[in-house]
Image 1 (cartoon, rainbow, N blue to C red):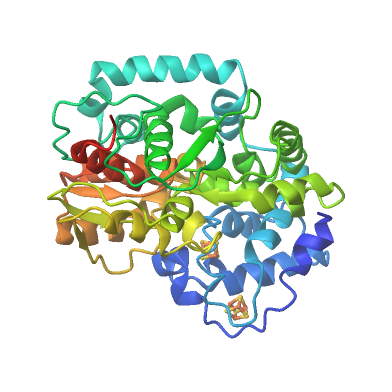
Image 2 (cartoon, rainbow, N blue to C red; image 1 turned 60 degrees about the vertical axis):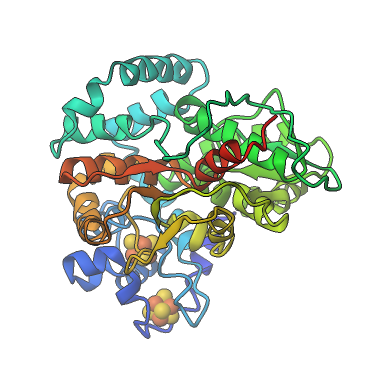
Length: 420
Ligand code: SF4
Ligand code: SF4
């Protein structure tokens, strides 16, 4: 992906402005320079040398972009905003580097070895229950709320006292299906703080006729680095994953929308390496694999659930219906309609950390809409969204459990006796 290649994705913009009302930062500030159209003008000026990479207005407005890509599906000209943004950020990062806070977060959360220790400490802290008690709106309180939200969600299912194993023997009550195979992508944050989602992924896919295999290697997808403008580091991580997933052509199952979106971009990230595009073509969200198989229905779950579609699933991967099919396989579950649910929650990788004011401004209207809908459970398929929404709801005093959609299906399957 040459820098021009990324900037070229912006060439089709005709400045119509259809994207403005889909942009959460424009809605928050009303400033054209915080809109997709305004930022495209800035990025073109950067590429053409009319603005320098350290221009304070340029960097402020591009830093305040979530990278949510909510502007892409509504664009009649097919502008590839996300690719243009990554190219512009690479130029800016080459000039000014990455902030110490972002660098520290990347090192702690994604570096093999280091991250293992960091996640172990985070899990130990989480298990004390202290983060939930310290949660609030200030920076420390919000970080604590985010950590508290990574606990396994209380999905409200009656599991009938069954102990669920990671790789269950599927009950004879489930109609046998032709076996299929899938390779699980574990990633870094999902493996460090959301192993229960990996376990639920394996179990629910098993019920639907998949054998889930693992690779010994593989790690961070590189999304946080790419979004920060660290394209070379993202390429290094991408190459490691390409090498780790060369085993056959089975689908690569991903349960983190951010990772899935990044993995699907590997062909553009490494344009001269055909194996990267081959990997990208195998990537499937877990809800897509489940939806293709029905999925098998579970037991009733009497819960009011709000589904919050992650931007990197809905806009970047264009996966809209599959999560609803997963929730639709749970009898009695009431799926609530929350207005503008497709608007970004303000998480956006490290954005919540490095741009807290804009992040909270984007989050605020979503919290009010959720408060009005009064769900018992908010389901969303991305770790950053779980953490952002969980912290925000807790700080706002709105009681709702957070979980991944497959956790609800998993609880429903357990209650149905699908795990022998
Ligand atoms: S990005 Fe698309 S929708 Fe937005 S102004 Fe340009 S052409 Fe119009
Ligand atoms: S990526 Fe999101 S925040 Fe950035 S311009 Fe597009 S809609 Fe707005």
